[in-house]
Amino acid sequence: MCVADRTESAVNLKFVDPQDERSACPICTNVFTEPWQTSCGHRFCKKCLDPLLRPTCLRCPIDGEKITQDGSFRDRCCEREVLDIKCFCRYQERNCDWSGELRHLKAHQDSCQYGDVQCRACGETIERRNAEQHRTNDCVNRALACTYCGGEVRQSYMKDHLEVCFKFPTDCILSCGKEAIPRDMMEQHVTTECLKAEVLCPFTRHGCDFKGKKDILDQHLKDSLKTHLDMMNQSAHEYHTKNGELEEKVSCLETENNALEQQLHNQNEELVAARINIQTQQTKISLIENSISEQRRDTEKLLRDLEATRSEAHGDVVSSQMEEILNTLREHEVKVNSLQSELARLKVANLTPNGQEPRSNSALTHGCERRLDRTEHQLALHEIQLSEQDLQIQMLEATSYNGTYIWKIDHYSRRFQEAASGKTPSIYSPPFYVGRFGYKVCARLYPNGDGIGKGTHMSMFFVITRGEYDALLPWPFIQKVHFRLIDQDRIRDANDAFNPEPHSSSFKRPTSDMNIASGCPTFITQAGLREGGYVRDDTMFVIVTVDMANLHGELWK
Image 1 (cartoon, rainbow, N blue to C red):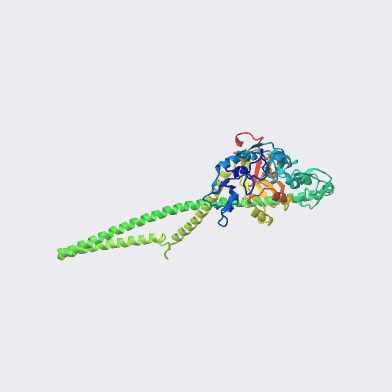
Image 2 (cartoon, rainbow, N blue to C red):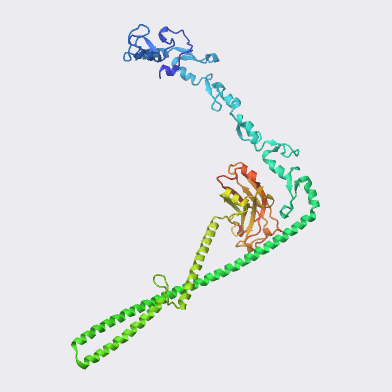
């Protein structure tokens, strides 16, 4: 390592002993930094010598002798003498008591406790011995634990963090008088406790349009008791009527479906019979064609025999033989014509090779064609049904049997727009099971809310559907149901749960494909859904869990 590397710069250095003028550069008057000797014998620092070697100035500044680059060289001997000089630390004025050879100054400065270092967090320059204290107590960007939520926050950002901290205590936004409410509990306070919050009447779903503060809700309930009873009776009547209509419609659809299945079965049988008939006709045609070929060969043989007889015989014998041969030929000709007529009739009974029907088709041919057309149509319907069954099999493969289902809902923005416009108010999850042979259930989600939560909340409901083992299960359904909306930022999930009402028709054994949905109409507000990390990449995840704590036996394994 050169002197320049070890000493950086000799300016402002203090030496233990007075310095000999021979160790100083005559130009900069400091201790040599990488000393070079010229052809005239004088020494200079490398940086001081470089300007003297320019073409415009090639003279020694001391004796005026001409100097050249080739005649100058690095003076290693002088360099060692300079490195042997003892000096003090540059930070002697800060009470550093180090002294040593100049060659060791750089190594000491790299670890000197009085030297300057820069804080990586804030960029401030401080003495090395104070770096730890600065990082712990003084740095404006040091990490501090939030008093309220416990999260690590930079000291310079603490004020901004407190403005959004979920656990920071605040006063009620409606000025009800309650203080020190954690920010993330404010919505719950306003919804369930605040006396100044406006709430909906519990009979809103039955048609009551009251909305007011909690302190006057009780009086409203007392004053409107008869009105509420009338509303409930009207709602019950409407629900009963609608339920009857739906059951009647389902019954009609089931009857129609059974008729179609029976028709499909009959058409399959007719198709099998038609195929067998076609094979039989083809066999007959093949036999007839073989017979015609044999008859033609016999006729040709007779003609050859006739020619031979004519050339060899004479008189009455010839005439008799000729007459016999002619009779035989006539008989064969009649047989061949008969066979050709039968072959033509059999061909007419089937489609011609190019797929067209001849004009002389019989009524039987038209009937066969109609039956074949109907059969092809039924086969197409059967293929559609097979595709639907294949889709159902795929859905069954993806379901669960432990009472817990993770529902992935994609394209959420489009589903919300369709719900807000009324096109598709709700969506269903694939079915899952509470136990291997247990209840068959699914979830139903209203992106724009339903009932008292319509337009303000996202509603989440639970639906019991008709299952394969309902006859073996206890009814009504009484298991507690939990809904959990996953916060994909891992901050705070949205949770809710409900216990089924045993007397509600929603939890009795299904008499149709599925019961009426029941659950949480105010599962989460639209504002809370947008502010949290519940929707990422236009996708959300909902976990539906059915409590199976009191379910035991073979059905639930």
